[in-house]
Image 1 (tube, rainbow, N blue to C red):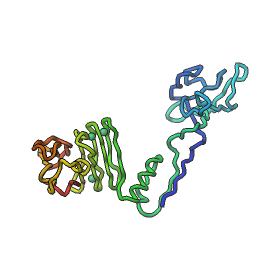
Image 2 (cartoon, rainbow, N blue to C red):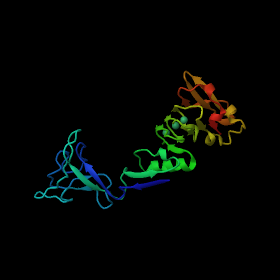
Image 3 (cartoon, helix red, strand yellow):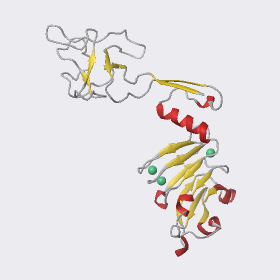
Image 4 (spheres, rainbow, N blue to C red):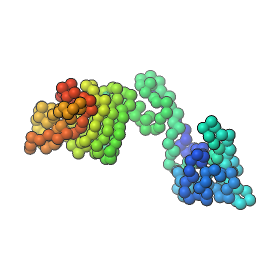
Amino acid sequence: MITAADSDAGGLQVFQYIPYNRPSGNLTSDPNLGDSESQVPFINVNPAPTNTGNFLDGSNGSTASEENPWQSFSSVDSIDGPMGNFAVAWTGTPDFPGSIVAKTYGMNADLLPSTLDNTEIYNLMYQTLFGATPILGSSEIDELTGTPGNNVMTGLLGSDSLTSGSQQDTFVYTSFRDRGDTIKNFDAIDLIDLSQIFVDSEYGSSTPFDSYVRLVQVGSHTEVQINPVGDSGSIFRTLVTLENVTATDLGASNFIF
Ligand SMILES: [Ca+2]
Ligand SMILES: [Ca+2]
Ligand SMILES: [Ca+2]
């Protein structure tokens, strides 16, 4: 069972200039002011549809003039340095990230991290329903790391760096064009899913591992090479490199066809 509440959707955020730089567009860019401003400062995050900036509430609200300057909320310094200059920012129509309150009980309850965001609630539900957490890369070069539990990791295009978790992970290749990846911590229980490549009619063999896959030892690594053209030729190209893996430790059972 999982309960989750996104506590700041449509709510307020405490915003602090010190020690951060003030966004451009404000009257002053000096973060050390904040208590005597003739104009209301704003941040360019989450503006409502009807304005261009997210104007901040100070201790006297969100109005200011020369006679009655805008004033921040104050604070004593912390052991890390100056504090203070606090303001309240209200959310616009988009959500702010963070501040998810969640509790779990029962199966996979131990997988709830101490801090998380909405997408991790989704991952936890997916893990519990389907037994695996999806980790999806992009068409760029990605660095993806497995979570506790089983992962289904898809790097897509780009020479991605994928790190397997301690449980059984499945590395999915949607096309030979996803090639060039490096997988760290791959071990004998992990899987490489080639089914989306070999579904092509050019791959007619009933023993695809023997026909289209080679495991080549290169130093301490294993290169997984596949035939990118199927039955029309007998060439092999590297799809993915498994770091610190001995080729003879792997076999057809590490692949999904
Ligand atoms: Ca990628
Ligand atoms: Ca693993
Ligand atoms: Ca890739």
